[in-house]
Length: 312
Picture 1: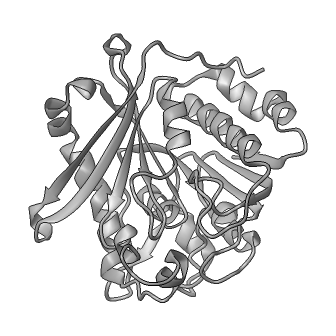
Picture 2 (picture 1 turned 60 degrees about the vertical axis):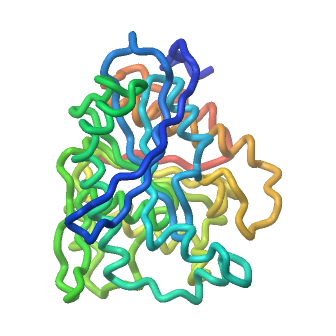
């Protein structure tokens, strides 16, 4: 039984909108915020979610609705240019269209500006939306994402990345206290610099999550190509979960081009509870969540459906 956190009273709400970055030629950044309608909770942690290539702010709702019920705000960011606009209205299956699209360095770097920009806009968004007014705890911010979104979260956490002139630079945002990385990236295709040099600057607590069937939908490499990011990170505490039979789309709530998954409900439950335990540990300083995640509780709950390890 997972007894390290209790649900809060209230219904889950959703707030949507768009912010325009005038310094980037009126570049739009869409957002979708999940929370629970209970102003008595006061200020609560906020987690940023970044979608994968060709995705949108609509993905991974099963995770965010779950976390919202335990007293979190989750802000999904939609990165215009690497979102559904890549394939919507075009002939062929979305994955085939995406594979054939040239993703420029400018398109990628825009992602790394979208998130700090939206964080800067949060006080304005709080004032505009009564449901989140005076609700954000700016000292308890987390960053998360899936696939390309995980890479985006990694960069926010300190991973260095080549700019438009191929110079490796840091885009780290020090406001984030911890990060959750679903189908994380080892960046093998972007540079031949050593993994330790690339990932060591990520020094906040991090949870790396993948599955044994989580190969790359672009290059068809198996899940093990992701592991150098975990092994070489400089995170003061780091976690790894490899879900048995988990594939690339189990973290988004939809199947894309993949076949029916008979373990969907079971795997989603594993994702939700381990994610909650991580955030409770690092954004709420919960000792009971830490004990459950790193002790016998999570191992018993997981059974033989995955492999978990923790390192300092």
